[in-house]
Length: 400
Ligand code: ATP
Ligand code: MG
Image (tube, rainbow, N blue to C red; front, top):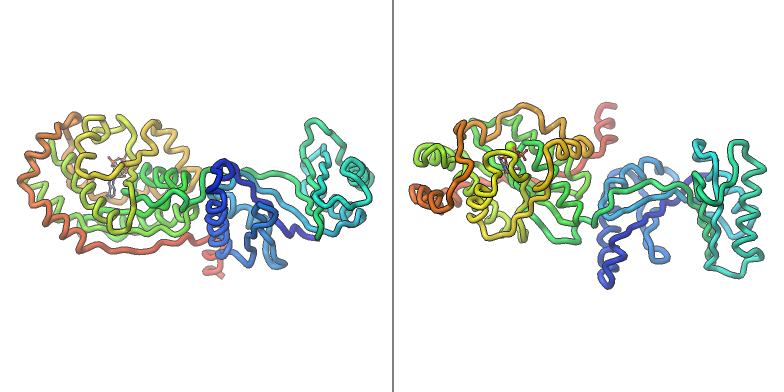
């Protein structure tokens, strides 16, 4: 016997009323896209919920691990399918209970949507439970607070048994909330911001500003790696690499140094907005957290945000750096983010910046720049790539 199904539970989706159908379709699509990387298992909608059918060649644990990264899933359980015959159900129940040797107590909960069975649910609980007890040594029954609840669901064409619950990440399926454009630096914060936007169902594309030859190939590769890690949670990430050298040189020459940071950010906003329009994204996302650094005071945020008319989502706005770092470590971006390659801003920007820049002053200094020309030059050099998540098994394949 083998785990041949995985039950997928989703919460918030069900609350969305008439959108439910659409949401399930999106979640199913996302699950299948992720599963395509690792084998033949696919999700199906059966009895108003999602069930993954695990093929003979597939590894249920590997599938569970992959699905734990898919937003919209609240929890997952392994399941086996058998006939409606009591003997078969008992055998399957014993198999399921032997799968988890850490459990000491259990309880059987049988439900019948097919009622023409010789036994009712109570009787089935008893017959299945006592069979498991007779054939194991490590288990006792606890009906109030069991370590494992064995669900038995009798349907016309067969019986599903499931046990044990692994938590998913919750959130909403990516693609159910429209598209956003993330400003992705090589730092710790912006990948986490992108991850959290994905968690709420947004498709995330990314723009990254680099300044060759002052920033090198390794700095670029670092951002590609970050996008790849984010793609584990949101499907493929479209990454737009934007040359920013000319903008920074002009700012360096023509803007007083204490307004350079504000105006650099305003230029990033303008260019990002254009890319967002092109790609039909409805909002920008960045990694700002209130008060974290000079560019993230309210005065600064106010003076920078004005340069674009798109809404700016700031998933990290209320977080402390340590909270952001915890998430970065958990999602696997931290190690990449702390690699010490030069970022465009660290090279050109002066040590001291205004912590309380004035919008009017920023606008006045900007008249020294040919903004339209700088924006279109940067956009003309844009390089776009579609970054996919490569599951670790692929890397192992390369080594073999
Ligand atoms: P991060 O860790 O994300 O770099 P940070 O705390 O270092 O954030 P800043 O460097 O001030 O803060 O950047 C604020 C935000 O501006 C970043 O979170 C990111 O969204 C955006 N940003 C900064 N530099 C770049 C860049 N080179 N390309 C794209 N976006 C950038
Ligand atoms: Mg940074």
